[in-house]
Amino acid sequence: MSAAGVKRWVTALFAALALGVLAVGCTGGNGSGPSPRASSPSGTDTGAATDTKVLAVKIDNVAPARPHTGLERADIVYVEQVEAGLSRILAVYSSEVPPVIGPVRSARETDLELLRQFDRPTLAFSGAQSGLLPLIGRAPLDAVPPSRTPEAYVRDPGRPAPHNLYLRPARIPYTASGVAAAEALGLRFGAQPPGGTATDSRTVRFPSASVTFTWSAGADRWLVALDGAPARTSEGGRLGAGTVIVQDVTVRPSSFGDRSGNNTPFTETVGSGTAHVLRDGRAYEARWTRTSADSPTRFTTPDGGRTDLADGPLWIVYEPR
Image (cartoon, rainbow, N blue to C red; front, side):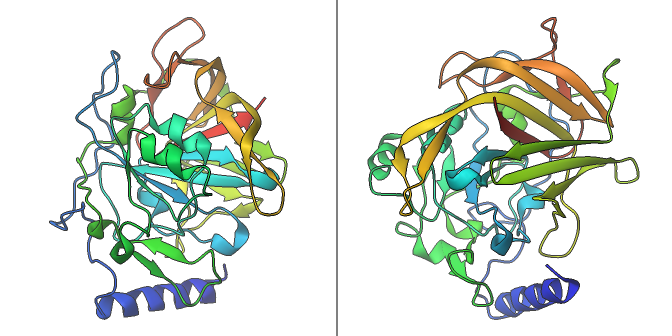
């Protein structure tokens, strides 16, 4: 989006705030005020922190959906493949929740298995195909689509549908814990480890999409580009990650598809494989293991040691094998 476009979006956002359409402040579901961001939680290595509740929001990731709103405040950003080789985002929040998040899109079967490693998460999504709805209803999560909480969603008239639906988290039954979502997976933040390979950038390619991370020493972040264009927030800033994990996974066809006849791919997040951890301008080889859907994903060094994260948002990209 151009600078003029960003300005129009910000103007429209503040106009909506002035009218009371959108909730003000970074709040949990009770609207009680901002929660402190936990950038370096202690975590554990024994299992998920069951008292850390997370909010997961399914976010659109095609060009008409950009720039994103509220994505820069996510603790964890998952990028997965969807129909036609495109990508979509699942953003996970718990340390704090911005007043507006979006654009929100529909859930996928992959999300249900991915989210089982958290303790009964809240899932915000625009809807799902009819065959998937019973699976969502039986999943161990709290679903808050527009059909259940219509007051929590608003459409931006300045954007084309379906890329214009936004979540107002203060209007759903969720309260931020103040603890980074990575802690719910038993991950820890720590000092930069020795070794690794100096790396300026890394690109993960899907059949019809890509995501690139470029190290910026000045920003102390991996700056994000989506489909070759710098990824920006709705306020015009750059999206960045403190740590990036590129997770090698199997992506296979599922029993679902879209209206155009494209099969919906299923990303297998239970199993094991290789990974690369990007932090502090270096790339480290790693292994990932998830023994069951109810278990968190473990990331370790090749010799079985702990993999620590750098401060800041964590992006996990599921790279098809």
